[in-house]
Length: 199
Image 1 (cartoon, rainbow, N blue to C red):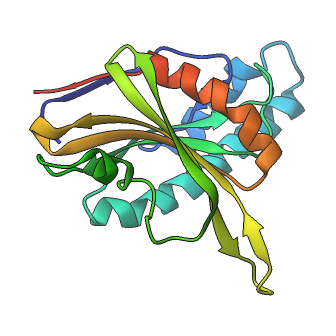
Image 2: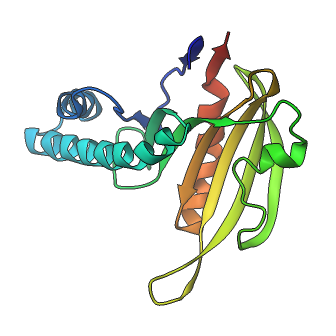
C-alpha cells in the first residue's frame, strides 16, 4: 500500500512482534530489553516465547494477505509491564471499505452481521493521534470440538477512510471473558498512540 505511513510510540503493556526479517535475532533483542537485569535462562525463555508467538502470528496473517488484507503491525499484551506470558495479540490491519459505506457497513468490516454472538455489539468513539476512531466490542459464539457453545470476546478500534476505500483496524481477540474486560483499556491506550496517514 504505497503512501502509507504508520508510527506507534512504545507502550509498557504492549510488546511489538516481528512480522518480517530474522525472527530469532529480533526476539533475542526484544527479550534482552524486556528482561534486563534478570538471568540468562529467563532471557532465553522469553526470547523463545517471543519467537514462537511471532511465528504463529506470521502464519496467521499469510492467508488474509493473499486476500488483500495486509497486517502492518502486531503486539503481544503483557499482563504487567516487563512480564511476558502466552496471551492475546493485537493486530493492525487494513481492510477494504467502499467509498459509500454506511455506518453499519463500517462496523460490518469487523463484525459478521450473520454470525452467532452473545449480546449486542457495543460501538463508541475514541480520540487518537490519527483523529476520531470507532471502538467496537462484541462476543462471538463458537463451537468447540465437542459441540460445546463457547463465548469469546473481540475488541476493535477502526479508522474509516472512505476517501481511500480503507478502514484501518486495530483488533484483539480473547477466549476468556475476564481477559476481555481487562484488555479494553490497554487496547484503547495503544490505539490512541497510533498515527497513520495515506497519501
